[in-house]
Image (cartoon, rainbow over all chains, first blue to last red; front, side, top):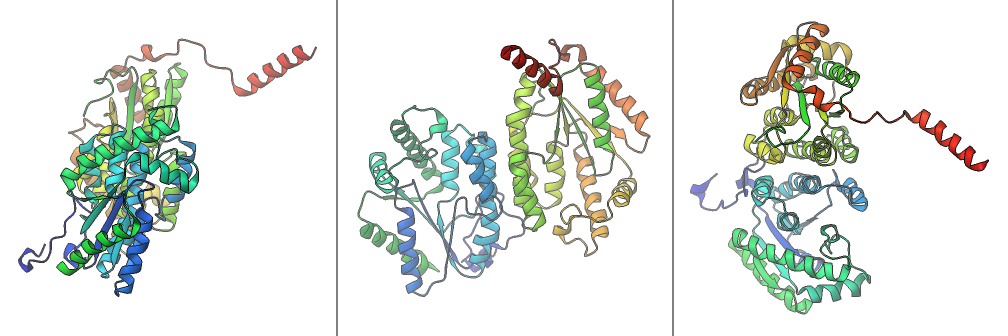
Length: 236
Length: 248
């Protein structure tokens, strides 16, 4: 790494992807994390609008969107037949595919990459299911440290309301129904989301991301995020 | 890392490792036939064979989408699926499980492709070690010729073309296989490989393997207590008879 130039702060969390020149990654990687209903997608859409108006080129990535395994992953989840390590590795494959084929090339080309969730959600979901944290840290040691991570934290009770008003139903996985926390989907959703939030708070200590209060009007949230992203872009 | 025996599983796992064309698949097939004939509960599992993951892997290979990291991860996913859904329950139930390739294949191949050894080993550390691992060591030329004679057209990843070792697939394959062999040899002692001289004839190798298996594993213990289920054709016939009885 060109530490002498003083501008190369880029690093992988762990052992990284072989053969990547970190100092060539001129773009910015911005991550928005949060549960379903936390307003991630809305915020990302608004941020893309704002960034492109400002003249920045953007690319969006998100979980389960890889060319390589997204279809297979979707299918396997419908049947709920994968065990936890398998599901975990399947998601890691999906992540690695997008990291190498979209995120890294886009950063190299100077784009701003907006990631709708990142390794933290993947880790939190697995940790809630009892997977070893050290194992996950090694696995996701391939991940690039983002330039900014915002975790939109919304009260589980508020998440329920938002999810129901949007789809009139709760998602099986977002309710953690595979964990057997409760037969009642409503109760299970609340418990599961509380557990995930607790793990996020724990991960925050290691990864130092910004926790943003998501129990707010859309505009006020966008204002805060764009101000913070503006500061990241100005750092250059 | 510990073996299944050390972890008090009632079953035992035997793995075979080696280069393509070393004859290991033939040998494990013959071992399976023998164990079955002895009335032992046997299950056979092959590398890269999980129904769920296979379509993604073959798409990735066909369209040359795979990088060293995703190549590694997709094979780990495949392994985890077989491990959690088949191997673990069967080993709990006292089966002798035969694996055509195990985690050492990933250790050798992924590291040859440039993945950090600690990363690869860390990913697979949910798996226990085999109770017995046979490594089939043939002269590199013998393995190469066996593959190249039978299948004149080499596949992209099989030949290690993704490593850009050579523009000629045959040359690339030779270099790639040579490097994998080096990786295998480097871990042979660490993981107690039983090295079989794969240049010998089939019968000699199989004789040595059967002898070793019966010495290391108390096969009596793994025999089926209950009679085998009836073959499907016979079952159908019986069912029809019962239905006729009921109709009458």
